[in-house]
Image (cartoon, rainbow over all chains, first blue to last red; front, side, top):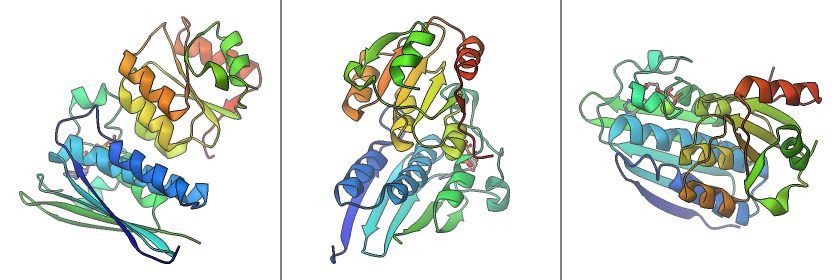
Length: 141
Length: 116
Ligand SMILES: Nc1ncnc2c1ncn2[C@@H]1O[C@H](COP(=O)(O)OP(=O)(O)OP(=O)(O)O)[C@@H](O)[C@H]1O
Ligand SMILES: [Mg+2]
């Protein structure tokens, strides 16, 4: 595998049922490419948390995935409300998710900490009223 | 412990994945918060939950969870069962409540999947 592979997904808003399809597709593709399972798992979890966040907090958006021989980069961009205080949002247990989201099993305030934990690099760019872009990298060792 | 052992201990019915019952399970997690599952669960786990939505299956898929047990006799929609089928995840449904189901599996020697 020497080429760079680029994938693009559109995450539809307010469709909780379909949330995770993009992450699932990426997981399947990485597995097929023979990427080590522990790397695939890190990418899958980090991307899935980000994808869910786009659906429940930000009216969907786009996910770009780039796979090179040395790393996997995921860029999750939305035009949602933005994050007021990133430091606070990064804390375990902090969540603004409404009760209906909580009753579906999300809103523990663990998503962003999980994304940080399972990615090797993470960057959040956000602006209130404009949107949020989360970039994550997982190294292929 | 195998998935089939779990099925017997919890007097559960198989919703899908009959052909995967011989799979080994190393750890278990009883949880209704999917992000907690995503934070803590280890490899080859069984997930016990009272939630029935498709994200339970997605979460299981991302974590390589081999089996999901719905407690309190819950049965998800057909579309959820089909999703699990496609992903090779065994679905069980047990009449037992969460506490009892977890207690039985613990007694039989299964331990938590938490990283600590
Ligand atoms: N893309 C986003 N757009 C706007 N706000 C966001 C976005 N992602 C996260 N947030 C904010 O950051 C908070 C924390 O996010 P995090 O993913 O850690 O927890 P959660 O989504 O609320 O719950 P969980 O991920 O455990 O289901 C959210 O409650 C929300 O306020
Ligand atoms: Mg989240």
